Length: 66
Image (cartoon, rainbow, N blue to C red; front, side, top):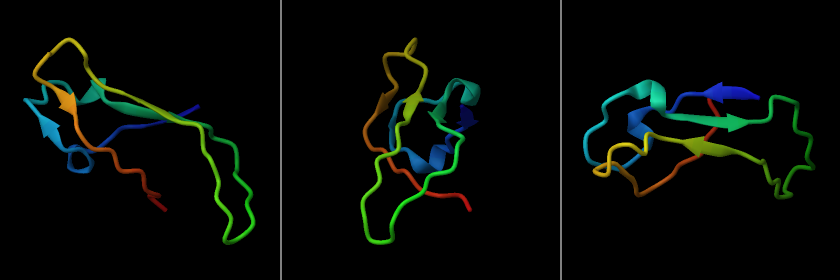
């Protein structure tokens, strides 16, 4: 799986970000084929530091970086 590190700009955070390397997204690295106009579900997950109780993910945004 490819790993894409999230930019702090893409997240609305409550708290202080301490280690950027603790943030990321996992998604399949194989090509996705779809018919134009149809919906596609892409399995993905994200992770963030859970050791700091002051950090809370309040909004997610998924986008293409191409």
